[in-house]
Image (tube, rainbow, N blue to C red; front, top):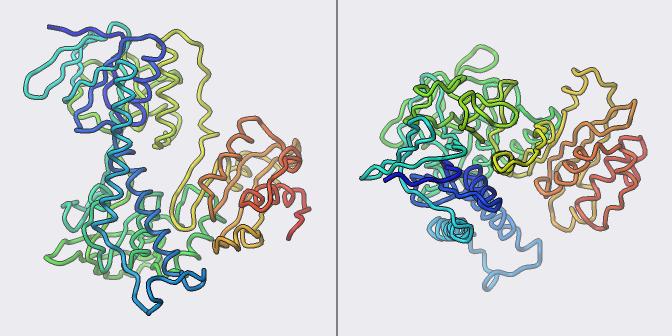
Length: 475
């Protein structure tokens, strides 16, 4: 028997489940195929949520370690060392994840979405075969949406054994804090885990092939993060290539080529490979249907349509053919909403990928949106820049979080804000204001005239706007 639907979504990550819910809200009959035991995908189960939960525990540990400065007495005040209980950390993290996955299940039931458990294969003419024990046959009368996401990948010459040479999937479940860990890659995953493990007490070495940490960020942000990491005792090796990694009974032996042409040997209990993610398309039989691919990614147009009618794709699995596609949960969700609305017959605007906020939850946090100073200059803008440090703010002093700054990049000719880059307390929250400013094509003057409440971290954004016009009040 073939069960028929208007829309079949393959994958229930942040792109797929959101697409399914929005399509159902618009009156379409929807099924979502997901092989995992829970809904929510990488972000909810292995990525965004568990890593940020661990980072919140690291932040709580930092506060407790400084309890004396806050005037807080723990127990009888004796010098008992503060330690981390990984069993309890994981229990709380898992409770958060379970609550959120159950929430997605509730939303599926509320919106009458059928969750078809199993592995999908596209058979053409709207047919989706699902394998889990028996084979089910589904038919999409309107559209199939592929939202299968991405998975961690390694680099040539480095074999991930999932025991000593691991990915983020294993790192979030480590039962004990390692004495030492080396991390390959300084994108969001790499620097977030560097912050987690250093806070928990591990010796951390981070190795980055490119000349600076978080290489997609503004150069000033990279420099600030490197300074902060080194101050915390994290060993930072940039411009460094890991040439070999050998797992042993009790650790990993690495060899790396340094920028000056010499090599160095590094030994650590674990090696975390955080060098990026690749698309998950194996078993879908996309090529047999003639779907155009590029380096394993599904090629789509601005409306997320593949070259085969009736098949769309969203999220980490796609390429738009005009440069790297951001592998971010909030991008996938936005694409899911747009493609569902397009299928339902709505007019949808193309997504402006230049206005996608980036958030990195390391310590200190990073938030950014729009053009970096270097990118703006390369595009031919006559650039004005304003920077304001968090350390001046009363709220930052109260919180004991005074690292970092807000930097605004603007066009001198029209005063338009081109980009906002920040590193420091609450940056992953404060970037929302900056994202709205770019969305509304705000000028620096408009941001100056926007009243920022006192005392808040957000004052740094308003002060940075003043600084862009050469008139910061408190600096």
